[in-house]
Length: 345
Image (cartoon, rainbow, N blue to C red; front, side, top):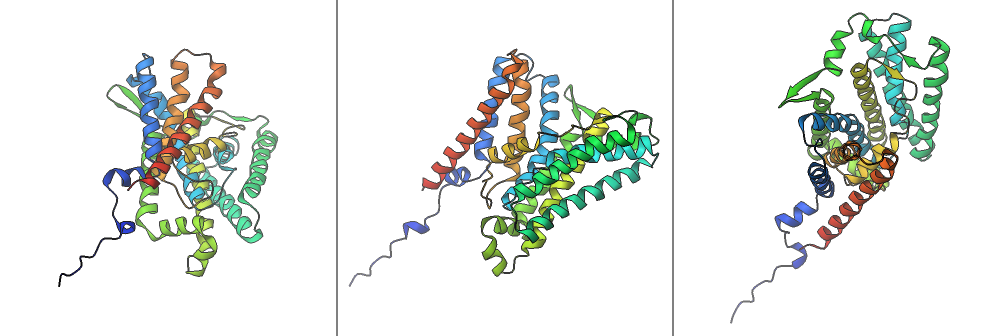
């Protein structure tokens, strides 16, 4: 009597390498970045030159650092609308403490870091303890910090911009870390690009290779269930808000020591750009899904479009409109790729 051969369950069949690749959250942003690069490289004379590349890489780097941190927070199911103004707040803190009160520059940098982390922790505690949406809590923080940047700074120094940073004692030391440049193939690259790469690598490693990364995905995808299986939800969310604040401090230092000045409106309006870059990179607004690499690619798209449009000689009044269309197109491509991947066998 012949023995029946067991048939494999199609539901357990492994997908091919292409299908697995398409399931990566950052694949849509990668495709969009390649399309944007090729478009401007072929239609302009400056975009793909070393000088042109150094410009859009520098723009992408500071946006990218914040976008990666915001992506981690969004994967954890939360938003931080104070992320943009935090960059100006930390830069102004260092500027006021050094140029007006004569504090040692390294001590001032440390004070700014502590204040940023405290604000991030406060945001997280208020969200977790009150149950209010993080959108509302951080919107309140946004207005508080904006008021401090404008009114308090003007009250202390009589103006809304820091000047004379380059004359502060030991200025060259932090400038070498946050404001220096180096040459690669004829392009002048700002050190913020290295910081951007480092932040992206570390964030990707945390998400994909550590228990903390599992916690981030868990609290964003199913917070009640996560708590039941022992995930430290409170600690994880606080850590995510503090990470966003830490990134805001880092970008604040990069901007301050690149330009030797900072204004009270620095960073205002950038918070939505960070969210857009994270979404373009594959993050879901509902949490529990996303990629640090995708957010970095989203920032790269932003930087390329932001610089590519002027290089093309288009009317600058169309800049934001065309940029919005390009970013929306990237989102649609990302969504289409994800749906194709879900149906792939």
